[in-house]
Amino acid sequence: MKLDRMIGILSVLLQKEKVTAPYLAEKFEVSRRTINRDIEALCMAGIPLVTEPGANGGVSIMEGYKIDRTLLSTSDMQAILAGLRSLDSVSGTKRYAQLMEKLSAGASNLLAGDTHILIDLSSWYKDTLSPKIELLHGAILSGRKVSFSYFAPGGESERVIEPYDLVFQWAGWYVWGWCGTREDFRLFKLGRMIGLKLGEAFEKRAVPFPDFSSENVFPARLQVKVKVRPEFKWRLIEEYGPDSFSIKPDGTLLFSGGFTDKISVITWVVSFGDGAELLEPEELREDVRAFAEGIWRKYLTSI
Image (cartoon, rainbow, N blue to C red; front, side):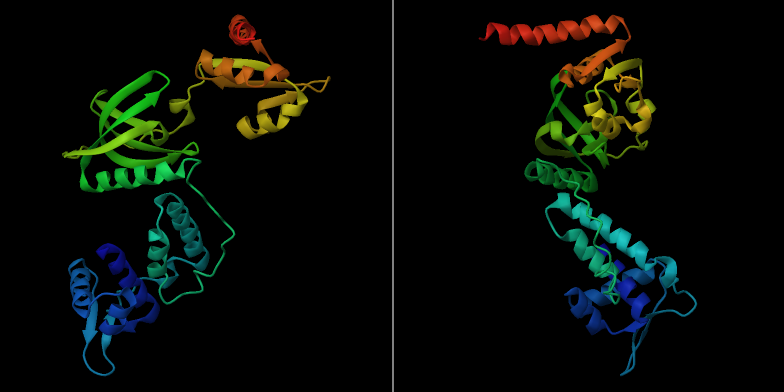
């Protein structure tokens, strides 16, 4: 891509100060004419590049306009590399690793740096996730609508959206876009979308950034107290943290927390089997009992 190559050219100039057009052409595997056009584009963008003819000539950034090469330290570059590698985990390509090679041109020690941070942003459904991300990313860049079938707790629906951002949040991938059905901006979970198709072009709107605060996304409308057996301490720590419960004299754990709705409370408590008991709110104890009884009756009649 032209933008990646131009960034790479700047990185080379920051590291080597002066290089020849043939060197750049070989480095980025393009023709000298393409490199000359890139240099012209960089100049038009306000980067003062100087070209000197002759045996000792080459391309350089005008003295006095150099970007401080210490702007990004080695550790900074290694952190960027870890992030770019994580994007490759869902793109199904080596695109971002190749971009990092261009960014670190002339400083190969950065690429051989700390590789002990491994981030995989894919899922169990990587084979189906990567094509969705690629299609949506292309739709965002080209400004085209996307249609799909969406499966949510409220049922199945057909949606057409104007996509604006891909978001990795709460251990899952989402797309943020304008929904024609709701006539508002909405988050859609990629794992619940099937049959994605590109549609017509759209005129882009002013886009508000989604509010990812827990108060907005998961408002705690119900405060509960649950008695949990000690062997499930790991789960409380993993899901809600060590401050979410206290240890009672008999060794049981008293969990206190907030849930968005009644169904979330019931399914969470029941997921412990007989290892948890809902204490408060009192009125929900009957709902938990009815839920468990319904499961018991289903298996009773199937015998």
